[in-house]
Length: 105
Image 1: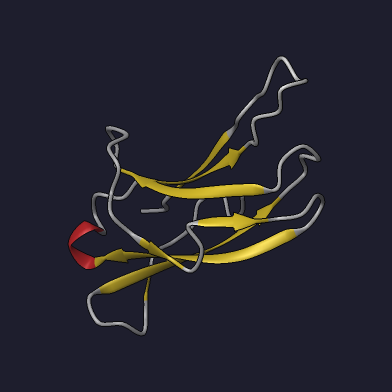
Image 2 (image 1 turned 90 degrees about the horizontal axis):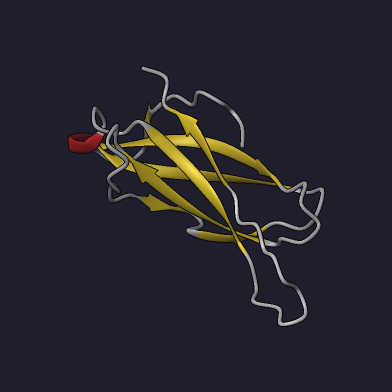
């Protein structure tokens, strides 16, 4: 996920900030990713996004935005994406990954 250190910018909506990010899928076993936002204690923070769960084909990128309320702006530390895997009976091990970007303060 890029940028590694995104910045929260003022959005078109009053009292809301936005971070613009790009996700690149380099895993051929994963097509879906979810977005989440956390504070410094890894507690979830409410947010809005153009895509909470998004489909990204192998070796493709997807641009997305994360919207944060101004009251939560100073609490936000991490924006993360997590791979979503389908349960397949013939595979023994599945590895899910979480990639996080730290907000630039």
